[in-house]
Length: 242
Image 1: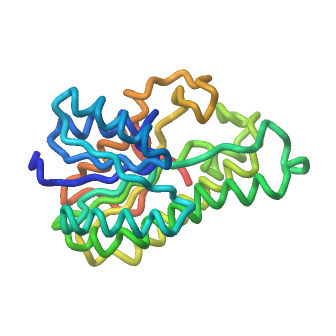
Image 2: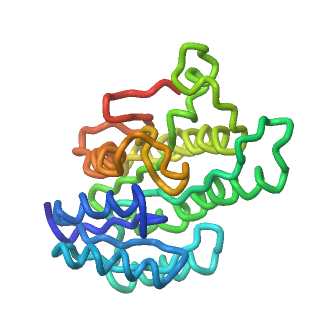
């Protein structure tokens, strides 16, 4: 892998984001860890540097337009382009309550990060990704985004009814499809990744999958060959139902 290839990972200082950076770093990518907290971002980058990975922290809050534009300028100044964008940053704020008891503020806050933040970063970074010969955009989704599975009583997570989180990830899949459609005549590929129920801060580490397992599909989609798919929704086993 050409180590001149750059990847920006939002929410990259921990969990699946950091592990994705580790795996891509060992493939030769230059890793840019987007982090709201500068100190935590620097600590995460230092941990990757200790594994002989080229990594640096970039202050980036997906809900803050100023930090997004600052990140764009920093990447442009240092690298001139971006090969891969991994939209990993996300929140889960339902608190386990049913839809009728969800506070509107928590629905809005969820969409601010999971949907509007993802959109804002993608739109801002797209001019840099267009400069890459093989741009890739990977959006972190979830099996809980699948309307087919959510309406199937036999589905593993049918008992969950988290309006804010689940619907926001369904919206993420819509962003994937529509950006992929716009970019279909370019070399850029846009896909959604389902890492499975992975143990992270997002779920209080209740997930039964390791971050190594969760990151595997993200890495696969970030390193797709030129004849790979675009506009799809995948887990490590293949295509996921919408």
